[in-house]
Image (cartoon, rainbow, N blue to C red; front, side):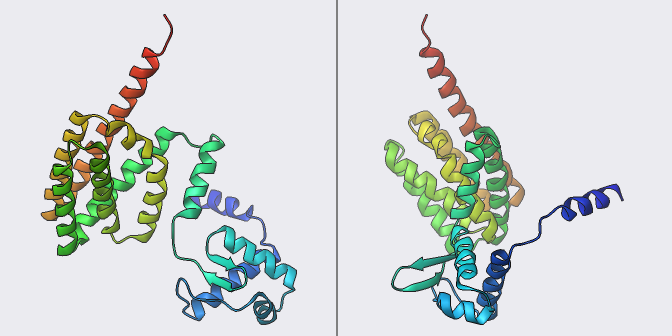
Length: 248
C-alpha cells in the first residue's frame, strides 16, 4: 500500500502538458492512425494546423518538440518526414547526464554489462541460422586479424553488434548503441595489446559456442565475464599510466 501511495503522489506532481506538447501527441496519433513508415512525408505545417485546429505558432512548437526527440525531420524546401528509429535521443540524454554529473563512466559501463549480457541471452534463444553464420564469419575474421589492431577492433565491434541486433528487442538495441558509443574508449585502450586481443578472441569463441548451442545461461555468463575483464584491463591501463606520469 505504501508503494502504491508513493507512486500516486509522484504521478500527481507531474505537470500538465502544454498545448504544443498535446499537439505533438496528436501528430504522433496521426502517424500511427495513418500507418506512416520511417522516411514517409507528413502533411505540411499549414495542413497539420488546420487538421488539428491549432495556430501555426503552436504547430511550429509541436514540430520542434518532435524534431528534438528525433521523431520527425524537417527538410527545407521539401517537407516534414518521419525519422528512422535511431538512438540519437538516448545518446544525447546519456551524454547530458554524464556532463551534468548525474552518471559516471563506471555506472555507464555497468549498465553496458547488464544490457549486453541480457542481449546475449536473448540472442541465444532467438538468433537465426544465418545470424549464427554471420557470427562465425566475424569470429574467423577476428582470428585472422589478431596481429592487426585496427582490423581486429573492427571485427570485435561487429561481433558485439551482431549479437545485439539478433536479440530482437528494439529498445535494448537502441540503448546499447547509445551506450557503446560512450564507452568505446575501453575498446580503444584494450585493443592495443596483443595478449588482451587474444583473450577477447577466446571469450568470443565461448560466446559463439553458447549462442550456437542455444545456451542462454552460458551466453550471459561469458558476456558478463568478458566485459568485466575488458574493464579491469582498461582500469589497470589508466592506473599504470597515471602513476607513471606522476613526478617523483
